[in-house]
Image (cartoon, rainbow, N blue to C red; front, side):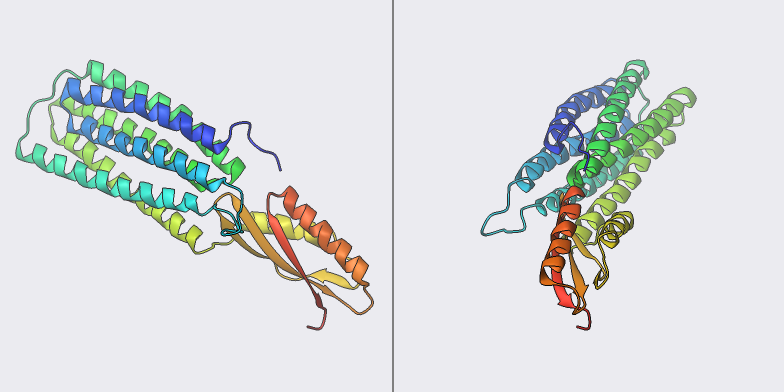
Length: 288
């Protein structure tokens, strides 16, 4: 199976480095304008720093080879990363809602927006570049932590765009409620993204099956190995982070020799290995 040149650990290290720079830019945007919208965006980016750091550690841990204590590997550690980031997102959303309440109770005119807006635009461009790398690497390596962090950053790009529009409109019109609306937009989207991350984490911990297209592709490869008197049953699959496992029955008739059945089973395991999965073939009588 084709692999991306960058590993998940390297991609997440890039994300963590970029997140630190982005936090500085967004806090600068808030500091120079006093906008609660820019403040909410900066709080969101703090979540990105913590999330990227934890995801990086979990990916390194998940890539450890299987051991006697954990013969199926440590891949599920990545799901803890997604759940952790979902919790951080919920905390950030609560902080933003608190800041919105404070601004409603104590409104004030925004400072000039030029410098702050420029810093925010620069942060969004950096986020976009890193997010595309993370999503591409996460898909290539079947890394939920990496892809999840990339999708979070991609959502952050759209959030920042919405905040810039809202804060800019507030500055041009003097309607301070637009600044507050931009902050609320961030909070609502954070809750949505957090729920999606936690849902995907739970699905992984509960041994969700492979995506439908991956199962179909593997079944096609198995059917190509079948011969008279030997056929494969339904494929059962599960995921453990980047590790993928499957089991299948090879149903053989009395006319199929042990040697022939064993050769088909080994070929099937090689086919699965080329798909980045570990396949266990159970040879059973056709009438079992």
